[in-house]
Image (cartoon, rainbow, N blue to C red; front, side, top):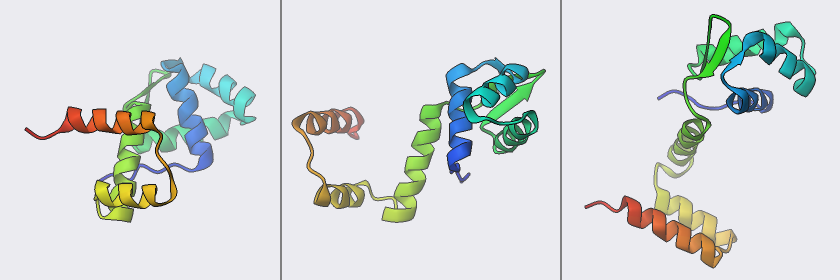
Length: 120
């Protein structure tokens, strides 16, 4: 299983790409200079790193995502659940609700998700 974990700056960079894709690599450099105060070399180094991880691609100077932000977050969630709770969603839920109260709206949303994914 690939490890989907990003440092703070990698996450901010990835979010910029997801928000603006498709984006030319030249425009990405300008955006990173403005938003992150990065130099051109820093942007290209970070882009190569995330391309090597299979998250983005830079073809003919056009940067696009190979996975959506939602897919990335889902993979991160799965890794956390597997690593911390042995893959058990009920164990996670029990730990979470031990210290956090759920609103009626949250309970309804969870019930809707359970009903949608109920095994036949």
